[in-house]
Amino acid sequence: MKNILYLIVISVFLLNCSVKKKPTFIKVDDIQFLSLKRDTIYLQAKAFFKNENDIGGKLSTDEIKVFLDGAEVANVSSEEFKVPANQEFFIPLSVIIPADKVFDKSKGGLLGGLINTLLNKKVNVQFKGNIKYKVLGFSNTYIVDKTQVVKIKI
Image (tube, rainbow, N blue to C red; front, side):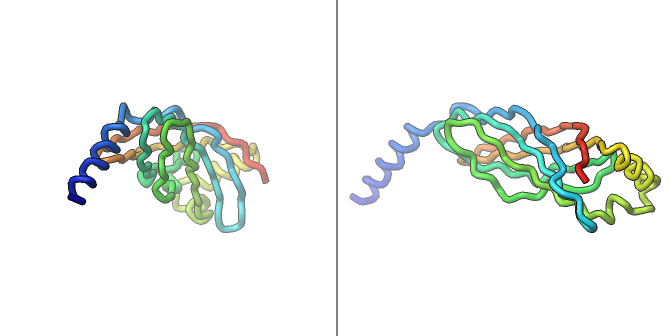
């Protein structure tokens, strides 16, 4: 008898909470330098979405690479993000770049280019990769390719 009651409750829940369509990926924006320290550079951006479903899901950002003036310097690292139901939201894309990777002399002139960039106080930052969405066995991948000129605040 308990099993039938559980089955009815689960069935009602699943029928009322449906996945109409995947959340809409709007854009990646608000790329900014948070801080420049002796051994690390901290960047952050925001990925904006709109979820019209009655249920959430999870987003993961492990496959996004970060480029400074065309040179790959880091990957976005974050935990899985819980998607809220029926609302617009953003997920933070935080990046920690080791300074030795940026200023490595073996990168074929990257040091000279970045010194020039620091003097101009602007740099091209590119986020390129995939954001994965998962819910109830359904998954989807969003392609991210955003380049923005960012002012460096020293």
